[in-house]
Image 1 (cartoon, helix red, strand yellow):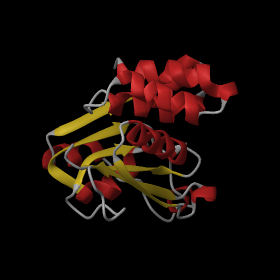
Image 2: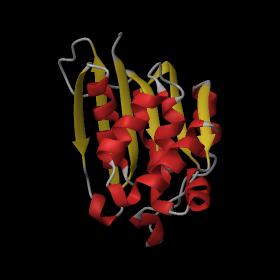
Image 3: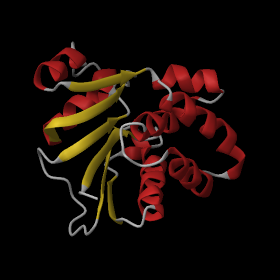
Image 4: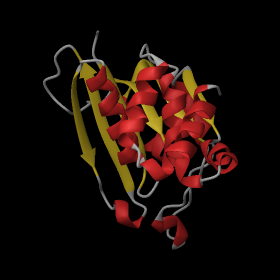
Length: 190
């Protein structure tokens, strides 16, 4: 397998770290070398969170440099824009259309950028959007946004669907597994 460089970007509390653990578990199940690096920022206060996941035959560094990401999985619109320069020109960016105002916007000290999807679409062709929050609500738990997005990403990889499900069963707490599997299926079929 050629190396696959993935960035998961979002806001603290959205489940990005659980998503990265599922992704790392998928790589291990495929016997890939995998490196995961989490940057928490002010995650406990709704701040920016980014996780780098690299997998392949042999991975030497856990970090994804600018212009190297094959996939960016963005849990929130502004985070997609914030990290877009890390995407390869022919990479895919999968974006949850959810908007979460950062503290400066809430405090009235800044404005939330307008036309984010249009700005990204001008520079990149492979932009896929999804209302993961709406789908998670329909599945019965808004915290399942992360598994909706993992499901969406899974269909754009060459990794078998059953591997993803197996990894989820081993990673997601048992009491939340059913709703998360449902959310994954909805994301995968979107």
